[in-house]
Length: 302
Length: 254
Ligand SMILES: Nc1ncnc2c1ncn2[C@@H]1O[C@H](COP(=O)(O)OP(=O)(O)OP(=O)(O)O)[C@@H](O)[C@H]1O
Ligand SMILES: [Mg+2]
Image (cartoon, rainbow over all chains, first blue to last red; front, side, top):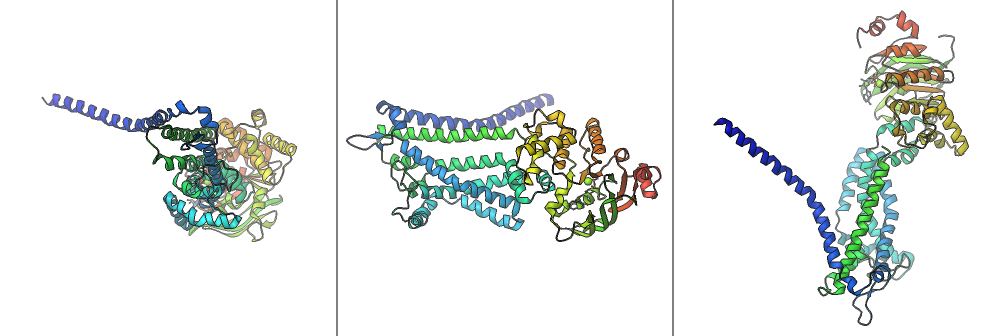
């Protein structure tokens, strides 16, 4: 009698065990399903674009004018280049600033300074992008216009600066972790050879933290590519090909955000916005893939 | 020892970690081109003392030094001394092999490059010479561009010795350089130390009394921050003057 009870209990426990395992497994693969789901949605909704527009035109033309009555244009080149321009522009200043700040926090700042600065930088990361965009319109844009003596400050460089500001917290925070986790023994070895702390920082500590710093930059870059609101507000909303850093532009994300709300359902224009989404998806995917490869390559050194 | 040229002379040295006094009134002389071993039970201050000789303790916050350390008759704790320059002259090998996560070549070339040598041929020469001195050249000459993390622990430690030699120091400080190594690798490093003393003054911390007996000319015995006895290695092991030394080397404690 008692014996069968125990057996039952055991069976029940086994089911419970299996159940819990299954639960965690489901959660684990949920992310994969969501990712695949999004990708297929983008492909399915984007694909019909190419019944009317050739894929070559889509990928090589610089003219984006889906609503023109005479001759509609569905080329995304201007927007892709715009996206790349503001992204690269933002990295150009957020990477050096971010790494220098991270090195300062990890290696030079005292405990007090670190305890004040780290939370401040993390708050910077949580400012909504609309607010940053607002800043671009009322502050940074006009400042650029005045400084370079041009009529319009809403352009590539304005977008780059704002995106840079948004990428810096990510870069600082992750790079700082990477730099502080470089073992002390490397620094000691370097200092014992009669080098000063700057030399040690630049030649030993930062290279040893390179994989983490790369991850930080890639995450910052991912954020810059995908960011919508701030660039939409701050880059002038013009679907022109960026001829320089003072051109007003419109990125891939901004185009989707502006046009998707007004486009008639199931038109080519509608589908083309999903096709843009798919392109964006692949761009961020590529960035992540490359960073993964870089990380693995440098990870081997350890 | 009286008639030997002295490389290092320590006078009345006290050392503090914050309020804790780790070394008390140490006076000792290290003769040139000899191997001097520091022995003593764990925590007695051997590593601390070794680090006062190239001022690596400066890196630890809240430490304090009293007394003087003369190297080539110059007090290294004088305020005019450039610590970076000092450490070029006083090389150090650490307990755990700690090559940089760089290639074997870059590990050895790092110091000379840092000190301004840019010429590739000159660097190649230094790398080869240092690796030969460290008895590692034959084992790694075909894979200089491979990561130093991929060689064995014993090879890594010899690489660290080569790296220390690359900047041409006068003194080599070694803190238990073989404690992480197997007997074969240990024997290689001991042979190496024997060779190196022709050109360098060597100070080595060791936990192994056999090692001290095998490789050192002089031995200093420390106990709880005090220098108990310092003499010819043979004397320390065969007829120690101090009862505490005798107890330690006969294994009665520690
Ligand atoms: N960074 C530090 N801060 C505070 N106290 C320290 C520090 N390093 C060492 N000590 C203390 O100083 C004393 C001497 O330490 P030291 O490392 O010099 O001993 P040791 O003789 O090298 O020991 P071992 O043989 O275990 O390496 C010990 O009591 C130790 O706890
Ligand atoms: Mg020690």
